[in-house]
Structures are given as C-alpha cells and as structure tokens.
Length: 100
Image: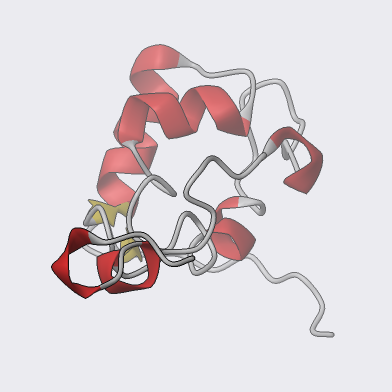
C-alpha cells in the first residue's frame, strides 16, 4: 500500500465520475457548509450516489480532511441500496411472468 502524499489537485479534477463531482465542488462544500463527516459532505455534493455507489470514489474521498481534523474514514460511509447495480432483466423474466 502506498504512503499518503499531499497532492495539489486541480479544481477541475473529477473525483466522482458517476455524479460528475469535481474537486472544486468538494472544496466549495468544505468551505461553505463545513461538514463534520463524510456523510454530510456526500449529502451536499452527491459524491458516491451514482451508479457505482461509491466503489470508485470512496477510497479517494476517505482521504479528505474535514475542518475538525477528522478524515471521516470508511466507518461513516455506509452503502445504500442498490449496493450493486442490477439489470432489470435479472429481476424480471421476459413477458412479465414470474419464475416458478
């Protein structure tokens, strides 16, 4: 595992590609709303609410340092249903008939 490094990110850097949340949006939310948890930041910016449900952006966002000095970390991040995208064809058989 790599050690943490402080990296200067462009405000145009996309941190959540499903909801198209940029680093600039995250910075603006941190300054404006001063969230105390990653969950609050998630509710304000919508990162992690897209098709992948945070599987792509969660590791990056878990490194965000919140104003109180806490990183928030993964424990505060609970996946919401649907945890894994499912095709409608997997839920229903053709013709609308239920499988026996």
